[in-house]
Amino acid sequence: RKFDTGDSVGDIPITKDDMFFTWALGATDDIADRHARPMRGAFAVNILQVPSVPTSFERKVELSNDFQLSYNINFLMRRITFEATVASTGYVGFGISPSGSMYNADMIIGGVDDDGISYFDVRIILQAIYA
Image 1 (tube, rainbow, N blue to C red):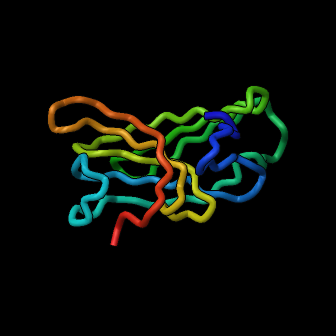
Image 2: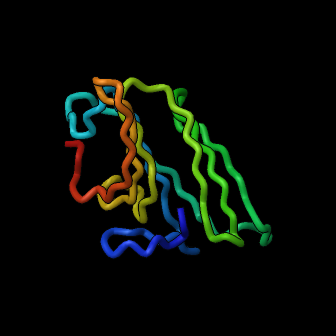
Image 3: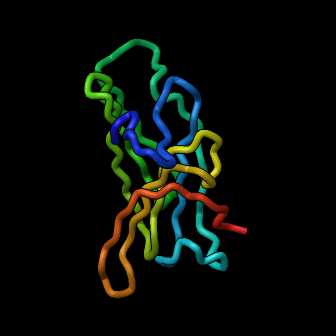
């Protein structure tokens, strides 16, 4: 992902400000299924503030027993690369949020539907999904 994708609607640029990585892991492939509460959370990061100015930085985070996230920041290319390792029968989502909330988060959502067809999309979460 570029630090600033230039999307005209809903892009959250990666800046030197504090922000959050948000994530969710559902038991079904229906992200709007309010009855199957997923595991979800957020953790604070300040991606562009590191002790020294290396050309790259890598971090691995265990979000749950079923969800590990690695990310590599290339400062020269101004890109961040994510790798998610997930055990799930439903969807997986993670992204960037200025507040730690899923609402208005810039999310990547993927999974495999009931027909065995994989899907993967980038979305801005424009409404509260979970009651």
